[in-house]
Amino acid sequence: MKLQQLRYLVEVERRGLNVSAAAEALFTSQPGVSKQIGLLEDELGLTIFERSGKRLTAITAPGRIVLAMAQRMLVEAQNMKRVGEDYAAESSGTLSIATTHTQARYTLPPVIRRFVQRHPAIRLHIQQGSPLQVAEWVMDGSADLGIATEALDRHEELLTLPCFQWAHLVVTPADHPLLASHPLSLTALAEYPLITYDATFTGRSRIDRAFERQNLRPQVMLTAIDSDVIKTYVALGLGVGIIAEMAFDPARDEALAAMPARHLFEGNTTRVGFRRDVWLRGYEYDFMELLAPQLTRGMVEATLKGEGADPGL
Image 1: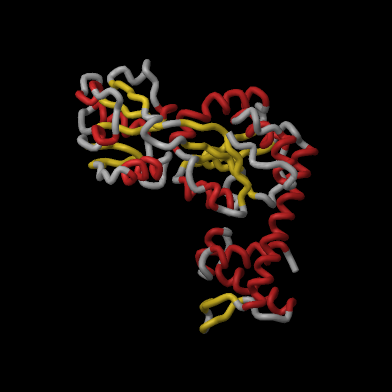
Image 2: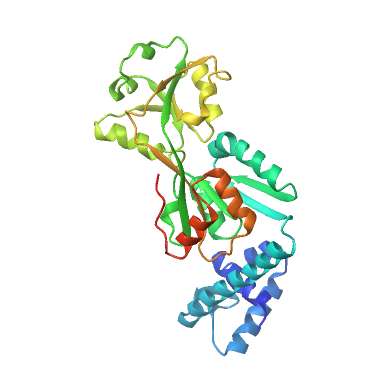
């Protein structure tokens, strides 16, 4: 039995039993993948995949047990490598972070600046996507840490910890009539076309719930995943924007006016998440503490062991 065979096995399952797609992802040939899986089945004396001709059609009952074991073995093999890297070369390595545009653009720059000052030899990789993509990238090992407001805490495979809370802001052109509304209400907001986040981004679910509770149907005329895009179209007079408060800078966004909306929408919690079964390197603990000072290494390790509770906010 070889680790390569286990990688082939897991990748085929991940690709929906599409051997060609698995081979492409692994930079190898389809016949090579099929041959190695066949050799593994022969060695174990069982059938992992049901077949129709040359096509894989299903995973057998014993195959599912083998797949679960293979996934754990591959994770532990990677953990051994991470331990070696951490202790043999503490000053070098790679940290891959998956996050949303808002976090990457507005939250992470000062964190990354301090991290680079502390760990100048660590290579950083930031990949941006939806909260669902962020969770998937962390679960499949494409990213070490995930940072998002939505979706991360829905997966049992991930340990997610709260970093900080934030609220939404309403933004308008500087001369907009809505600025005369005191206090600002959802009813007043619903009278104007709205520009806000896509359905799965940046606390959008809380915005929708707030209007639903008052039986209001807002005119959401444009959605985006990028706060800067939202502000651009608000400045053009196309509607009223609802954005994350960290995305507004009075000096940079001087063409816009901002109105606090904490009283209108539920608060939001940004979380950091990572796989429970992955061994964390020292600089990953450092990054999390720079992101949220309450996330000390001791607290994170205690939570992992089940000795500490979610620190909350």
